[in-house]
Image (cartoon, rainbow, N blue to C red; front, top):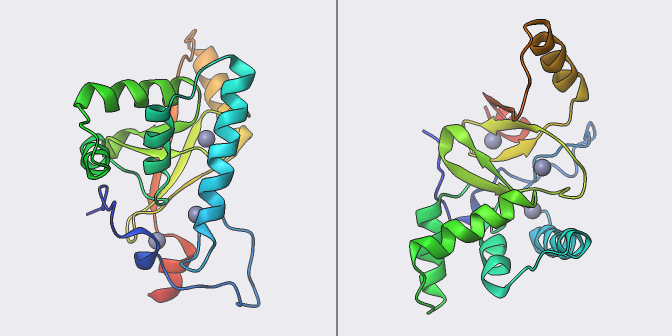
Length: 183
Ligand SMILES: [Zn+2]
Ligand SMILES: [Zn+2]
Ligand SMILES: [Zn+2]
């Protein structure tokens, strides 16, 4: 089973660090020892820029929900977000969370992982892209895949059937490199 609501585990439960392996290749999957504060700071800065560009307002509540989604690289469900918000001491009602998530999705700041009914932060909200995700079945980490060829193939195949694509999400389940190395 995948862990979707692991709000409290954070980086402790990520796979061990592989920074020093000689065959290290650039991977979108984070190591346990990576500087996650830097991920959060970059995500919040990107969100500020994206909202400024679009004339949208990143209110304190929206910003806080985004920050909570970014607590880890694992998808987080709305109820876990609600629980985390109430830890703040603020009285958060479910509509507050859902409205904030709607806003964040509309501006490309978070993605919904359909099969988990959970959300992950987008590391590159300014760039238009369709959802392509790699889901690790062992540690629950999710990384975005950026393969334009997939979108082109889907568009071509759909067009052949006279079908217009409005929204597409590709979710691929498997094992991330760190988990594969452990086995
Ligand atoms: Zn990180
Ligand atoms: Zn994205
Ligand atoms: Zn993994």
